Length: 329
Ligand SMILES: Cc1ncc(COP(=O)(O)O)c(C=O)c1O
Image 1: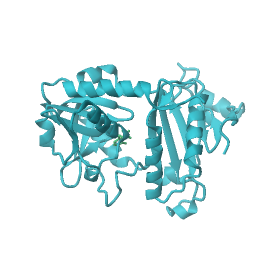
Image 2 (image 1 turned 30 degrees about the horizontal axis):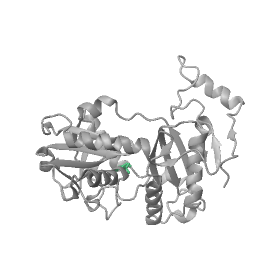
Image 3 (image 1 turned 135 degrees about the vertical axis):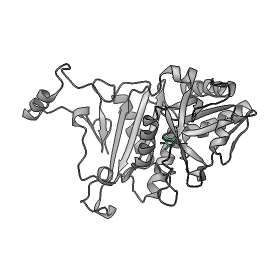
Image 4 (image 1 turned 45 degrees about the vertical axis):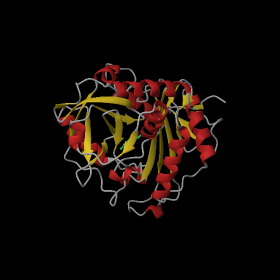
């Protein structure tokens, strides 16, 4: 696998390009970059491509069956935050679905860092995807001999700063989190339809996020975030067995709690626990740590981000600025 000297493929200067140009909207001479980067370079199996040319086969089982895994990773101030933990989780997801990642962890680290370097950003988001690869239309993964690795770097601004100051409003949705015996939420797979369905319900209810319950009616997580409540100075989050992803940001909250002498524990939680909590917040790589001030129309605490949430956010921001794997050699 080569990463450092892999060329960025030029967009074809052929009739295909000419046809594309005629279908672009009249008000823009070029489509807006989806990554937010003007000359983005996207890694696919050892080669860098421009956004327009970064394509996978229609026979990739990642597309046909959601058969694959991914990680969302952040880098701040020239360092990748908790990279080792993300790779550890990626490898566990792969093992669980019997997917052979076609490179070592060291090679993956280098490919990821090189992709960030190629995109000349110091702060941003990385989407790391491993698909089952190209097969035929049957779902048997034995058809797919070569898993594909895709690394996309992007700028990110998930929630406006106002949300961190004022807090989110969430609603409990009817769509239950997948039963671990059917599709374990601990596997970060490309099959996110369960989460997408919940997200649609939140959108229809004009809420900022969806609170997902498990089959027993306890809280599992939100569509892309773990959930925490604060009561009498103690922080509680559902256990992974409740149907939550083993969030990396979630684990950072445990570390911060330890550091600041705030007790953080796992326990089954119901909607009632959220309604009567003093504070509530969500954690995720993209969302970071974001306060929740309303759940199912009920105000949480006094309807403002609470003091413990605010301290956790402040410490988290310090950690993201000062720790992580350096991007440059
Ligand atoms: C379903 C789900 N839960 C929780 C999380 C939060 O995990 P992390 O903090 O590792 O991003 C994510 C995002 O990765 C997610 O997709």
